[in-house]
Length: 140
Image (cartoon, rainbow, N blue to C red; front, side, top):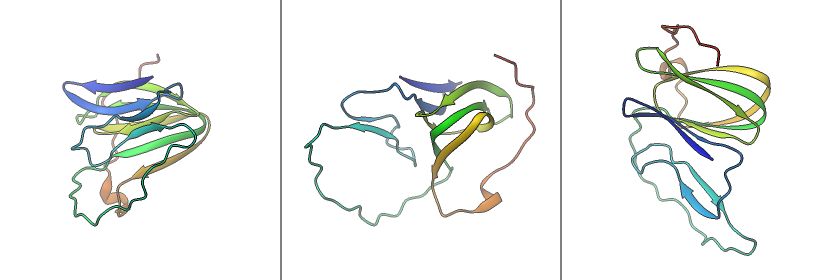
């Protein structure tokens, strides 16, 4: 199962739930995204040609991040650029999310272990703006 969080023509996130299971390669992101996300499932014996990636200058204007939930449960809140809450989703062990645009916040619902992948180099607090939401979260 794959879910896109969209609002007013903007893609905020792509969630790949742990139940997703199709053979082959499935890309979820458009080619122009600075972070690419794909799922791959191959049978035993499948050969993938040896390769390396060429040095190629790229411009990244906006940080996108991927979270792999290894253990626990977390609620992800999605905000627009005006700091208004758009939606919330609960992720569990085995789920993956690409945070593509807008704002986001989290509440840990069960002790969590997750892996984060995002573009570098790391620029510390220059990379984000913390904010107070314009409306309170509505319990779902």
